[in-house]
Image (cartoon, rainbow, N blue to C red; front, side, top):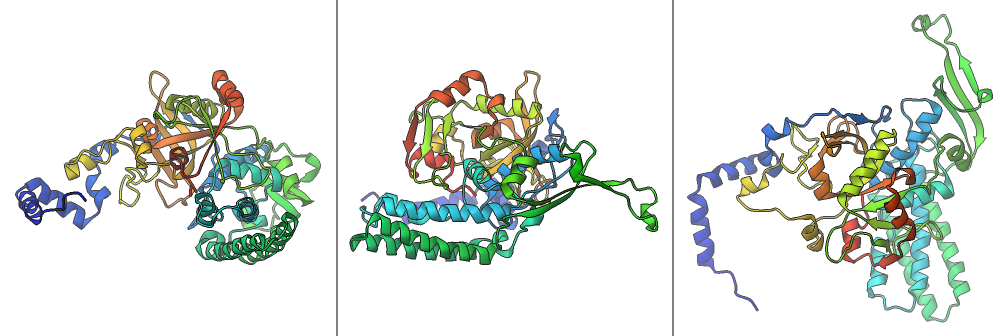
Length: 481
């Protein structure tokens, strides 16, 4: 046993603290406001401006994931909707995240029970079994989860399956799903112990999924198998002209005198897969997931797959390529220059003054002076933070613009968040380049925007399996929300 704390030492510390005028000022500031409010440096923060040399012309209305852990889905859908907005020639569009959530939960339930069957020989307190039970039905996920959902189940407009109380605040629904699946896991493991065959276990799993579907339909509503698409489109809409009708406002309406005819696209009785194929024309498999995780245990150029994590059985597995942070910059800039937004992930709450009155939208390393406030050196490099589990990619958002310096390197990024338009600056954040290098660590871009050498490494590097409790998985952000 090590040496215990000495009360005399604590008394000496208290006396020395009280003798410092700086300590008094810092204590009064923090106890009266909060840490971030007291530590913010307004002279630095006011130098950050919401202007960008490269930006997406149409970004759409700010979305809101509410009290749910669906940031990964919102970020991916915000990128995907760009293709729909361009095709329809509209200023904004939103896919149904409730529809995505329904099938995400259903797929996760299936994957969780499949893994329970696969691990039936292991003790109940084996680390793999614990991981399956602890995280199998969480809200969290990754870009690959969203792309697998789109590939298999398609998309629908938000109007075809709106948000519900359970999708906006998922904790109560999640609690019941977890309870149900924990019960089911126990039943399957006991059945195997009692001699049940693999065929019988799969049959039992099918009955269990019937109940999961019922819970989801009650909480989220039934997902549409077909729906009628009716949306106002612009003059450059690429849809079949036979499906577009011009509607002229009735002249008796006072506000219709100078109104131009509206172009309404109508496509009746279409499936979610048909809608995704026709009106959101992009390839959900055409992307590269680059991460930057420095450290001796995480060599650049290595590729990774997180086991016990993929949400869609037989879907495209998660696949990460570890590269230098400058490669993340280059690929994101290339995409933004082409007018395509970029999904990315970061440790969003690091040095983030989210709840202060002013400058609550700035992510920077110099705008929050915690070292000066506490007279303590907090500085760590990224590799050390990852090793010591101080940082991980907790939140997914979307790059919509970037300001470059005279050398073509990023100075600041414009970020579309999914916390509603009242958060940040009208729903947007500004991140300095050095903040992203320290606390960011992933961008997902189309293959065409990736450097040929990096793309070759993505395609050809053998993929190493890593467990969800490994340092790499922790850094990547287990159950990102």
